[in-house]
Image 1 (cartoon, rainbow, N blue to C red):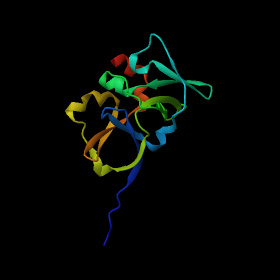
Image 2: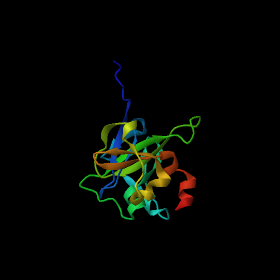
Image 3: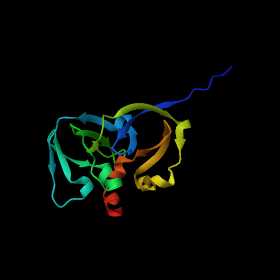
Image 4: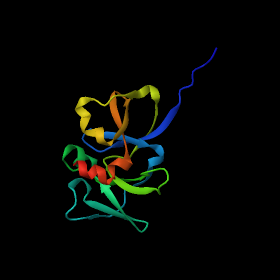
Length: 157
């Protein structure tokens, strides 16, 4: 008797507030900060008008709630920022950027059997999504971080 093995992958489930959730690969969330200072950058896009100084680098901070829903993330008593890691191409150096989060990221496991299509009501995720999976009766898009922080994405807006 042969037992079928289901391969699972680790991911971070990200909560951007107001029911807006997405995921990134486990290796793409580098750190989560709850004590930090953000700086406003005048004249920039509303969803990315803050930066974080971290280890002598200036990192952009994206508010996905502002980008997707047109409203700033509603912060509780503490502001949570996740520092993400991505590469534009495998041969290029690692890049860092930040995401505003409403709650601490949740470590989850997903498998290929959970893959599903992006619902029509979430079509605004399409330019940023690698694929989607079903998790606790929700469809969760997996964010393509390299695309989110690319010059081409800014041109789509």
